[in-house]
Amino acid sequence: MTVFEMIINGDIPSTKIYEDDLCIAILDIAPRAKGHTLVISKEVYPTIADAPSETVAHMMDIVKKVDGKMRSVLKADGTNVIINNSPASGQEVPHLHIHVIPRFKDDGISFFPPSTKYEEEEMSEYGRKLAL
Ligand code: AMP
Image (tube, rainbow, N blue to C red; front, side):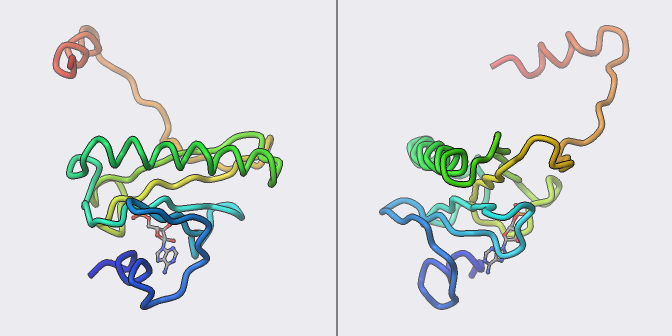
């Protein structure tokens, strides 16, 4: 059972800011910034690839509301919205959740890895491979 299932079942405490039939939103216990929120699916889907698109879309609507609240109440200048999918990405809890992290001008936080470079022709090759 994932730690988030235990939270959803009420077996361990959390600071819950929202709940409906499909998801809950709680404060992250180890915040990357104060107010760091997790929007978590109620059903266990290990990654975004496993979840119904309707659930993901609904969770993103809740993310938008969290973003709005962070801007209006915390006076955040922005947010990072992040999903880690599978351990290779750094995912620790295999239960779909969307991080919403409030950001402030000059807060010095950096989440993106440093940029890399394509070899000649490689970018168009990747473009072809990834074309949907
Ligand atoms: P990820 O690496 O994307 O799987 O993120 C998992 C997140 O869950 C981390 O940011 C943890 O701090 C957070 N977390 C783990 N246990 C709890 C808990 N009991 N309550 C709130 N957040 C938690």
